[in-house]
Amino acid sequence: IYQFGTSSEVGKTMEIHTHGNAGILARDVSLENADDVTVSWDWQVDTLPSEVTEEIADTHDYLSVAVLFDNGQDISYVWSSGLEEGTVFRCPLPDWADKETHVVIRSDPSEIGKWLSEERNLKADYARSIGGEMPSAITQVWLISNSFFQGGVGKARVANISIGSDKRREKVL
Image 1 (cartoon, one colour):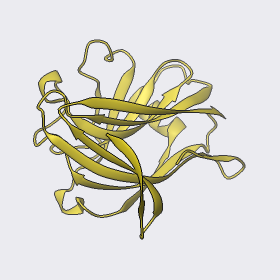
Image 2 (cartoon, rainbow, N blue to C red):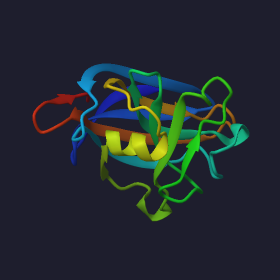
Image 3 (spheres, rainbow, N blue to C red):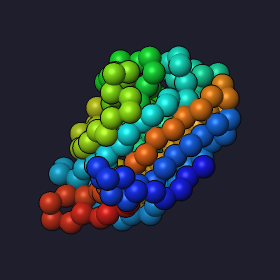
């Protein structure tokens, strides 16, 4: 379930609640994949949908903000319940394994329930986590929630999603 809400700390939010299901909210964007392009957001994760690591198909329940490139590849920035920050892994699901890469950017359980701000340089993350020929553009920003495999509950709020550079920035949420 995705629904709009508000928070006194960050303003307008998208509230995410997953329980035994999965969903992707996609927002089209059109940006050159330049050296200075970043995606940024604030989030408060209250409950992770998995209590174990998410890198195998049977336990691949997670919450993320993701970016899709014009070559069909995407980077999904996840909060992991057991993998170390900086861990990179390809999606373990057969239909996604050749196109989705997960980057663990949070894993500290003491940060659950706190509003945190993120900013990621897309070209640098692509080079480091996927490699190969660099895509020329960014086409979508996604919110992903998945608790289909273990049937757990995931709850989070996301706010202030934007993508771009100092020259041109698009507000996504």
